[in-house]
Length: 346
Image (tube, rainbow, N blue to C red; front, side):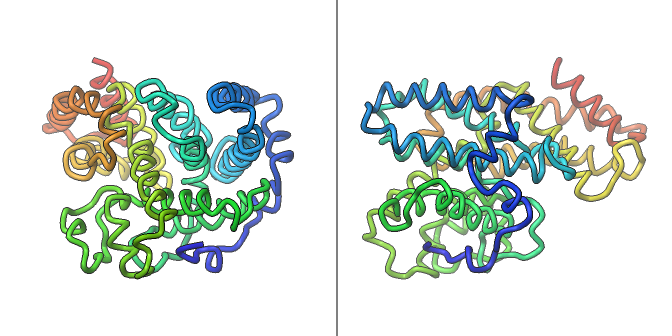
């Protein structure tokens, strides 16, 4: 579509193994029937609000959600051989079930058109599809995000969407996943005043990026609407900052475990001790106070009070964790995680 990543990131073995929604539903039958039940309940809720004319659109979106979730589950989750402690099908469900429901409960379904609610659900299912891409995309969009965009557009194709008729959804999901790139952007966005603000989610800086790669985008109502969806999606992805402290701490531990796995360090070995200590103390403070910013009014309205309530606990737990190991360094990453979980629970 707009950014052209489909030409760079082709289909892989997981896409070929799960080519359509029927194959995805078959994967979930039995062990994760709860995912299919959730999709059906959500479809009924949206159908009741938006009316019977929305049925076809809801069916296509349900197929795409199930297919995206299944592919992530096979690639990096419970159904494959490369398990990631954070980026798996459970992460899809915490966004689509817990956080998206928080949006719906606080804002009301009338706050956005149906296609935006569906785009956010598709974002939940598909934004982390790829986690081991060796090839970076040009510009600030991460390679994993670019590859996930390419696959998601193919998922929409496979589930009955049309790139001309449904351009709004294609562009919305493309911008949302691109905007979920998170960190300090090593490749600056020229001519973007917002870029000087530092890191966080790319969603806040997408207009400056588009100025460079799609100079005539302004005035395109489809792209302008997609950028709004991208900001809301970015807050959906990083809403752990404003959820309960228990949920914030749980996400930190899962990310820590995944990070050590990706670095090839055994959590029971000494080599993982200091990296885990840094990640769960200073690293959490940096994420929470320096990198995380709300990108949308909607996200701040739903999760802003929770973030404010979490702030003193992030500082206190980080300080206590450093103090616990100030005199005697930890023996392993597992030891650090155990103490962090104890402090977070207290």
